[in-house]
Length: 222
Image (cartoon, rainbow, N blue to C red; front, side):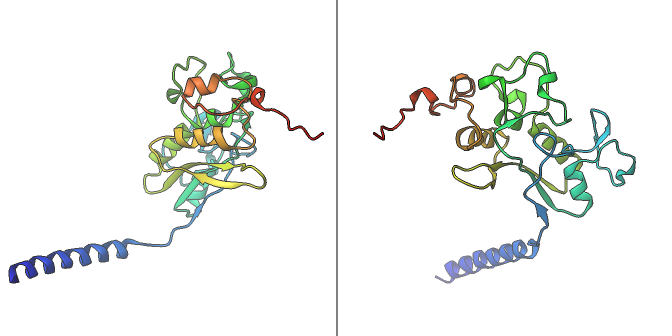
């Protein structure tokens, strides 16, 4: 009995010490859950550019000599601990360097109407099965570069969801890559109508279930 009591006391002590260490490590953090870049309607790239089309490969402390300041590095320079790229869903007209998708040849878009839908810009081309179009950087590729430059900070991928009905909602999914948030955008963003004309995206990405316009029957109000 005494031996069991000693074992229980030891376990309790270790548990308390472990919990104490965890509590001691807790702290308040400052961050930004909502920011836009040139992928949507923002004016700046996600990461610093040292020259036109050239992304900084290390953290830049003094941005005076940069070709273009990046949204996330600038936030970290101002002392933020975490940031989330959370641009609105729907479609995208520009890439991360502010180049129009229409300048790519051939058109990299694989969804309906030849548009570059937001779900496709969220992920890397390596996450699109059988992709054979022109090379480009998805938002997650930029995120990985920022994480490498700022290992002590949190750079998260997210999306400003246009929910059915009204207003916006900052959204994120904890995952190893951006495929889950891309699928969420495709399925549930009010402004993303990809998949309502054809099943191309559903077949390519294995995201079935989105109803096409042809399946809609107007109510009879007579």
